[in-house]
Image 1 (tube, rainbow, N blue to C red):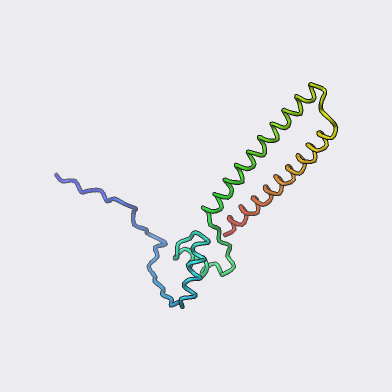
Image 2 (cartoon, rainbow, N blue to C red):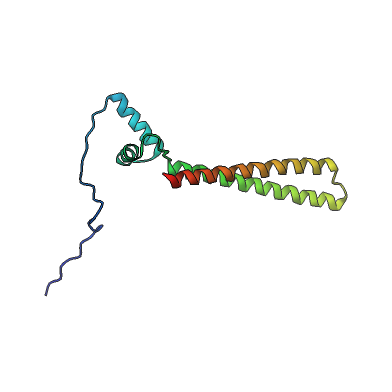
Length: 137
């Protein structure tokens, strides 16, 4: 008795299979513009064309790799800022125990910490807007 070999790969699509082909002629300038948009969005050519044609020209496209890289850098910078704040607070506690903490240092620290909190809140607000924009596309 011989076994039939298993098929390797993705199973065939039963619905939603793309079988229609369209062709478009572009000038050199139009083709270069298409390549620039493709590079900026990180989408392959067919994904880009489908989004633009089917969802309109005003669709927001986001380069996910670039966004994640930027968010990673922002997260690292926020972590460094948090470490600096902890070090400053520790130093202020040491100065306070020694009786050397001046009101000017406290005022300056509070001013800088307030600015840091405001920037962090603006960052959170912007990230929520980005997530909403990504969900709507």
